[in-house]
Image 1 (cartoon, rainbow, N blue to C red):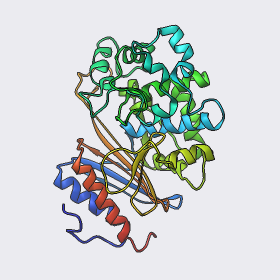
Image 2 (image 1 turned 120 degrees about the vertical axis):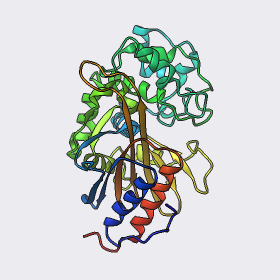
Image 3 (image 1 turned 60 degrees about the vertical axis):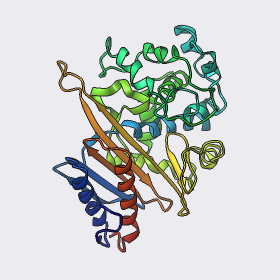
Length: 348
């Protein structure tokens, strides 16, 4: 599928046309797309028998939920972006011991949010929190269970690969730690607090994926696409739902940029942001693939891919597909969905 290689409908049906060609090219079995504009769903479709009204495992799109919860706590004075982990997790550390690398104690909430806390990430040898460490942890625990303190403690037993604040390295460890921070700051279970703080107020429903609750704050949520887009609208910078301080911090790319692109790209509270000359666009991708033996409750293997985008005019879309594809395939889908959007003449 080469950009502009085939004509598109001037209606929202163009989004389905793009998705259909993309799934054929990359041999995707099932996919859904939901498009929202001005507070209402204007298009939804399924490919390969997939149900656009079903709930799907979000994988790393869950980070936006965690980021939004932290933003609420900062807005309400329960946390500060400069709070170090030694203070944010004082009770946890007292009960479970200090990290092996003392630099972890100085990592701030802002650095955890923006993947600059020093943990190993996808650009290093591995994202240890969800590879080596998780594999070892699951030898004695079920992925269906919420993570107990032993999981984060195991992450803290590993040496940081860089000093906090040095540079961006996408890592699940920081968001695992933020789940514990939320629980310590609120005295509530992570799932309960986040559902009440950032889902229920906008009429969205969601739960942790029953087979992978262990992923919790870094990748554990399951939601309908329409509900996710309603939640995602809270990142609208013109409304500052998380307060003006958090909004301004989110939009300020100073010290948050990453990658090599023709335009600025940076990371905020669980979301990626970019300014390609069309206004601020907010998005994220999610992926999770694991092959585990079934247990008494059923299958545990996962193969999921998600993508959510919000444009500066408030138009947004959610895509779920399986099996997982990454890299250039998802970048191509992003470009073609943007082309579909630009070609729509009527949204009715």
